[in-house]
Amino acid sequence: DAKTTQPNSMESNEEEPVHLPCNHSTISGTDYIHWYRQLPSQGPEYVIHGLTSNVNNRMASLAIAEDRKSSTLILHRATLRDAAVYYCILRDAIGYSGAGSYQLTFGKGTKLSVIP
Amino acid sequence: DAGVTQSPTHLIKTRGQQVTLRCSPKSGHDTVSWYQQALGQGPQFIFQYYEEEERQRGNFPDRFSGHQFPNYSSELNVNALLLGDSALYLCASTKTGGSYWGNQPQHFGDGTRLSIL
Image (spheres, each protein chain N blue to C red):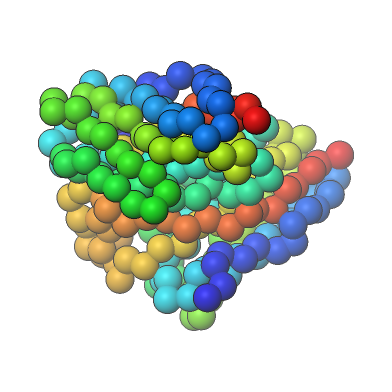
């Protein structure tokens, strides 16, 4: 899988928007961009994914640069519950049948602190 | 709808012992993956099971083995425990039908915290 680069940590004030950046300059044309987050003492939680177009769901928005070499996860109003480590991961969109591969390769992610 | 459940939540063992961790996937899921997460690090892939067979393996020694049962639940076994095996062990499930696509999210349990004394 192609590598991603994220800041080690970020801070945000509660109820303000948060923009979490991810650089993936070696992304291939068939890579999906996935975001997971891990709250303290919990397993990772899927947040959102996209391929080329910006995506929205109930948790967040994903903005993908036109050249796809970077993306930004947007939390529209940070709450204390959003304090977590956020991981940006690339996944090959090409499917495999039979004994295929589907592992997630995690980096260290971005630790988001939310200030009340 | 129950998500991924893991047991036990915490476990303490001594060096040289053996341990078995258990995972029940989310309802409807057929593929289970195991990850090891050391303190302050991201999870590292151990292996993945589909149709009761190990389909892919990460860079872990043979002391780490697993099993998947007909009901899709899974076990992770670690033999000859070392101090370095102390970590959070995570189970993740997804529905693949044997085909793996880049847009399939994985669902994680909250893990088993294994401490080796």
